[in-house]
Image (cartoon, rainbow, N blue to C red):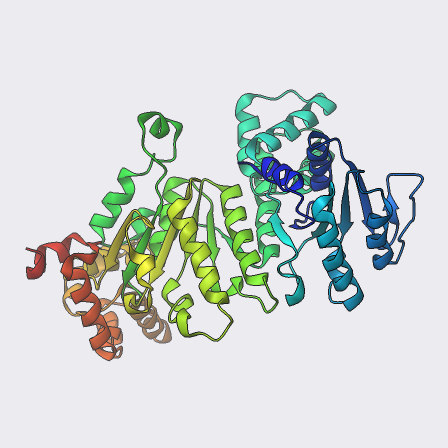
Length: 501
């Protein structure tokens, strides 16, 4: 069931008061008018605080600067006369006792009348006494077909010739933007050089980055890292490389479903976040980073609304990668939190979406402590696979040194004894190896010379790795992974762990 069908069903079912969240007033009002025509040809009345009711000369200005009068207008129409009353920004007045009481009275009388009140707002803010009275509905961002129609109309109006390739590039780049933003950025292209070309895709992507930042929920993360930047983790890299074309139409024709996602569990600094970035770059997909803490708001219903907004935005941008860093910290011990069940509801919405989503949103979640994750998160069906990312073996440490030194000193790489460096840094994570190299560069720089293998070893001797300071936690993680509850990301660990053999 699409949004139009769902809204039409609410109208037919005589839902008295519907609360719709969107920043696209114009597009929503056009959609409501189209839906209202299909449901008994109901008249649409539009009110806002400044101008009162509009679109009808007989009612023009009625209820101006008077929200209570705007509600009284609904009662003045005959009971059998159908109507949809759009009240813009009306959520601002819901805390007023007279408005709240009037809405509750209306909700009883409108159940038997072909009338519906639609409150339109860009955010949810609902008093407790109205929670059972209002029905919340999120208005989704435009679909790919809607965007395609909009761009085609613009091309026709401006008489610009275009190819199917250019059209598809523009549609894909514009997914996740509102119609108004799409019009604005394309107008900017036309004003700049009188036409729209493939090079203008970057302007659309920049508009998209700005739009996502303004949600304050997701970040559009530029991914430049490559699979080759990951040292070791051969099993994980093989798994990813096999799925490189899984988002293509060819894969759908073959019968392969969209990949769901990965849960990467392991020790801090072992390359889990780097892997998320490398996946996006290798698969040529946009990378969205979610800070789960941003989902939680202080107002009633706000957290649930932000969660739905995050899901809608991710699906509008699909195919994409949704990166959730340290998910264990966000949902640890939520059963005992004194927040009225908000965290529990957000968690329930999120894991239900993980299990049931049909959109090509590939979720990459990372966790440092599996003990903090609720059992529902790690059961089969939420993710395609759970990988354990452990401390690198000696062979992998050599590969990690090679990756970093190839970037830092590509012309002098042969001057470094990679095998010795790997041997002398047992229990070091990838992040700790990188920090060792930074410290070695400071040593060399302070003496006006290039840094050497000896400098690296000296720097390593001054670093106490996490494997020693958090020994018990790491041993627990390693035993958990070795018991068969996760796949080993590294081929080395799989070969050397006696429990697995």
